[in-house]
Each structure stands twice: as structure tokens, then as C-alpha cells.
Length: 381
Image 1: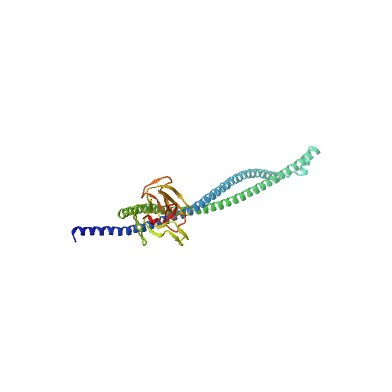
Image 2: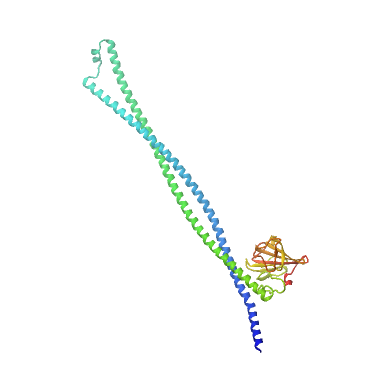
């Protein structure tokens, strides 16, 4: 074997080795992308569920705040009532003090009268008779004495009645004050309990907000990781295209296309063109390529975009026109990166693999219309 032939064989083995290893690496990246996408989905689910919890907690906190405001309002009203009652008690006490002073004054006067009458006589009929100038004067003195005694007695009775009324009024106000103070104490206990409930809910809210922050950090990190993995996968697919003249699908039932068109994405063909019963019964008007959510989907050739949006069972779908009666369908996309009327070049990314519409998992539905009917896309590669 000549030296040149040896070098050629070695180079050939290296190229074959590269073609064999690349799908393995791509598969590894695809698995990593699957794992990253699952982590993103888990993080987003955690965020959504925790946000629902937070919404409920915030609603309960709003109720607690409203109840605290209501109780504070009640306590304020009770304080106003207590202030009025305290003022009434003070006024009543002042009235009682005046009455007591008046009573003491009258009692002192009566005591003095009694003492004088005891020392100098009690104003008997005989005294009035001998000291009177005539009978009319006698009658006048008797009547005057009777009037004074009755007046003093009436004053004492009135004074006693006044004291009784004041005492009763004071007792009533004091009872009302005690009742109101008791009500205030009850309301303050209710307020303390409500504030404790709110504090617990505030703490729970903070805990859930921390969970969301952590999940959001995970989501952001995995989003960046997934974008990097998609870039690596796209680079490997491009390298495979350059090495094989087409795009490789890899996998256990891998298909290495060849020809002038670009294979849409890396992945395993999970359902071929034609009749099928699983997972859906009917005629399959295309091929399904199993790939991770977010895998770039590339245009088969230079084309114009006919439609880009929701398309029934296809879910998010892009349809391009290659000319010569050929149209290409890319279904179940998670993201659409083109718009109707736009022109794309062969190999341009038109969207990302997903599982929208009638789909049991992430994959690309790849369909081709030629001559007005769906045909097997495999015939073009």
C-alpha cells in the first residue's frame, strides 16, 4: 500500500468516524435539552402554582387588613363613648359636691337652730302668748314658727332627694363606663388576634415569594442553558449537512437524507407517511420527527411563507411555498419565527419543535404537497 493510499484511508476513517460520532453528541445534547426543558417546565409550574397560593394569601391579608381597620374604628367609637361618660361622671360629681356642700350648710344651720332652741327654749305656745302684743301677733308668730320648721324639713327632703338622684345617675354612668371599657377590652383582644393572623399570613407570603424568586432564577438559568444547547445542536446539524449533503435525523430509526433540499431538524422518525392506527387512526399525510421542544426547524428550500399561525390539529404551523406546485407543512411548533408573506432561504429557521395541536409529545409534523396532494416527504431526500 502506497503512502498516499494509507493517508487517504486514514482520512476516510476520520470522516466516517466524525459522521458516526456527531449523532451521538447531538443525541447527548438533545437529551440535555430535554432535561433542561423539563426543568424549565417544572420551574414554571412551581411559579404558577406558588403565584396562585400568593394570590390567595394576598386576598386573605386584604381581608385581615379590612377587619383590623373595622376593629380600630369600633375601638375609636368606644373611646369616644368612654370620653363622654367620663365627662358626664365628672359633671355629676361636681353637682354632687355642690349639693353636699349645700346640705352641710343647711345641716349646720339646723343644728345651730336646734342648739339655740334647746338653750333658749323651743318657742312654745306659752312663750309666743306672753311675748305677743296681741292675739294677731300671737297667731303670726305661731304660723311663722310652723312655716320655718316646714321649710327646713322640705329643704332637707329636697336635698336628700337630690343626693339620691345624683347618686343614681353617677352609679348608672359608672356602670355604662365599666360596660364600655369591657367592650373596648374585648375589641382590643380581637384586634391583637387579627394582627397575629395577619403577621402569620405576611410570613407565609414572604416564604412563597422566596419560592417564586428561587424558581424564577432556575427558570432563567435553564432558559439560557436551553438556548445554548439549541445553538450547539444547530451547529452540529449544520456540520452534518455540510458533511453529508443533507441533514441527519439520527436515532434508532435514523434517516440520512441526501439531495438538494434541507432536512427540517435533527431527530428520530417516529411515524412515517401513510396509513396508521397509533396514536391516531387514519392516513398520515407526512412524517413525524421526534425532537426536543425548542429544536430549530429549517426551511426545506428557498420559499415564500404562505401562512404562519394556528392551524387546527397541526397546532402552531408554518406553510411555505417552494414553487412548482410544492408546499411544505411544519406542524406542532412551540414557536413560530416567520410571518405570512415573508421570504425565507433554504436552511432558515422557521420555528421551534413543540407539541401544540393534536400531539402526544414534542415532535415535528413534516408534510409536503406536490401536484395538489400530500406525498411522502422521504421521496425528496
